[in-house]
Image 1 (spheres, one colour):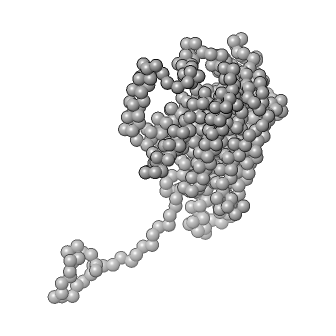
Image 2: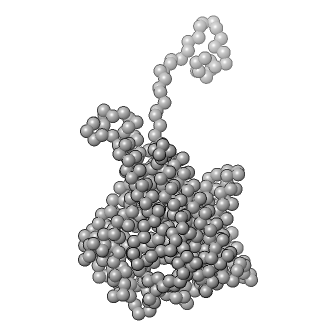
Length: 463
């Protein structure tokens, strides 16, 4: 408890690490899955609220009566840029009030606030200096390493999620029901290590780059095409923010390497080759999963057209799906792993966070979400923070073909909070330092007549 009081960021680190606990067999009939990481996120919010209240000066006292240090600390705990979260709260609240079934939309509203408001704001409050940033970032990298190790073992021993009739897909401790979970966490760790390698020197740089390269192995074994594309875009953003010249060189070398691989016989296993080839054929000859995703996107658009401003209400996409879905949409997707066995999962979301928000919260909700992400992206580029820009780029790209859901969602909310902490405090506000004491001015030294002033006399410097 003493360590937690001195370093509240330990609560955020614990929240990330608790997502690595195996979830076991899940009962989807209950509708709401509460994990240990969700409980830790509640503790994180409570700790952040305590820190904010303890650091805020009493309102009854005038500002002039307070010490300068108290005023600065109160302003630094919750920066003014945190107001970017206010439109997210308001738009989601209006969507609940306008929903035909308020009680059904209320759990979705609470979950949305947890992911995009409460946990990010708590991380912003608890991450106060460089040490806190290293604690939370290190927890994310540690979780990525653990999940990647478990995923590699699953792929090598055939105990992962099923793909093409074989259990060779690496999913970490999240299981086949959250097939994107391991890929997301591993991608976060890779981006953080890449940014650390660019900022480090010597052995630290080599260790960071080596760790990022190792994390690419379980990411490849996850067979997640979306995570591959998102990581490629995020890496380019990190390089661009760090150095435009370096980014241009990497793009040229990468293009040449891709041309050679395309002309050559190919490398890697046949499974990875077929998965890579499916990316280019997703438009002309989409497979069943891609075709279902296109149908779900069309369904979300149709729902929004009937509820343009405030949407149909949080968590109502699944209820309205069958009324708006095209006939090509299949009844569900198959999931199979050693823990949960074979299951037929219903398609309850459009697998696009922007379209999900548009259908359930309308234009107001989508505008608020885009304003939140766009403001952080602008601050990250302006302040030249490669890690924040890369994490935000990965999340923004991933939201094009994925949404929130599953145990790994808590890690996503902590990552958003870390990005907000890195960009919300300007340099002058994040590290306030007292002004050095002023020394009394001294006049020029008058040397006695007939005496040499020495070598300093010609520079006007007192001896």
